[in-house]
Image (cartoon, rainbow, N blue to C red; front, side, top):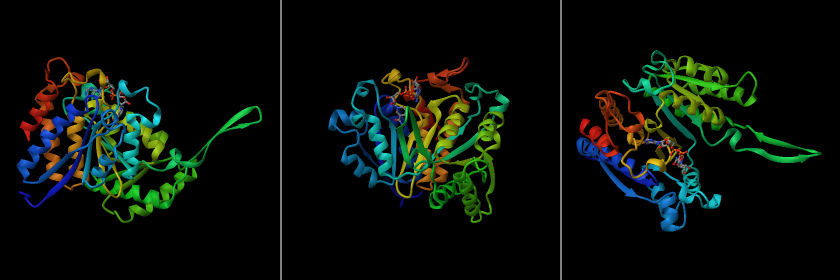
Length: 359
Ligand code: NAD
């Protein structure tokens, strides 16, 4: 028992299916707390559409304060048609972007894992997809999305657009360290992805990652060009453990990797900086199934496991959640989004309860 451990968690259910999947995840979290003796102090906060309705602000100051004072933030999903016509600065999405910026998260972690028995959900062949378990570590706050100069200007009778890809040694070092540390908790392999045959940014990237790797002699480092990596992901995804890459390449490769599993309702994500980490499912608020007890709570439940692993160093507790999910899938229980013939159909609440009971 770990009775002396206490963690403060900001809980932001948000909109649509958010509150439903969050309820399931909190059930699992509380059960882990009971079994391990670890205390989790949960505080609810408003974000997204529900915050606009109640506070006229997609990220009220009290929510931001709560997040900053917590050890970890669990967020479900934001947005929905009700708020789609608001001007951009007042939309639910602005609340989420502001939160990511305020927490200064620079590493985005997107695992893609195939659970045994779920290979049919993928569009790829079973023998290609079997046992895939990889994670994309994407640099989130630099590169082409933020570099200056940027813009579109008129040149004679035409227009010219400019974006700038820029990285400093420091920016590359800190994300590389995240990837190497994560690899230490996994199979100890990092594939750094760049375009060093063409781009100077990538040449600095490769050189810096090589330098950082000297402090991690236990981790095997290899390099791939981004075009090759995108091919390898569909040719033989099992070869990857940790994929480390910059912002634009990571944006594309993490979506490609997540589609290997074929089920958006199963995928967690983590955004990390030097302070509080933000944990959320990859999916959105799914307004089409909100309030119908149809949402798959597994992505949210696995986000709790990711928070245990990456922010709290509670490796054993994280594993117990992952094992429980695996067992329930193996027993054939499925929410509608991952249903196959011959399996047992359950709703959001029943799926969460099955996972909790399996712990
Ligand atoms: P979405 O992820 O909400 O839904 C896409 C499809 O996947 C829908 O058919 C939905 O029913 C299904 N789906 C998603 N999560 C599921 C789950 N857990 N279980 C079962 N099925 C699930 O994406 P969208 O429809 O493009 O966007 C809906 C709203 O969510 C929009 O307002 C969008 O802005 C917002 N959004 C929020 C986030 C976020 O909070 N991080 C991310 C993406 C989209």
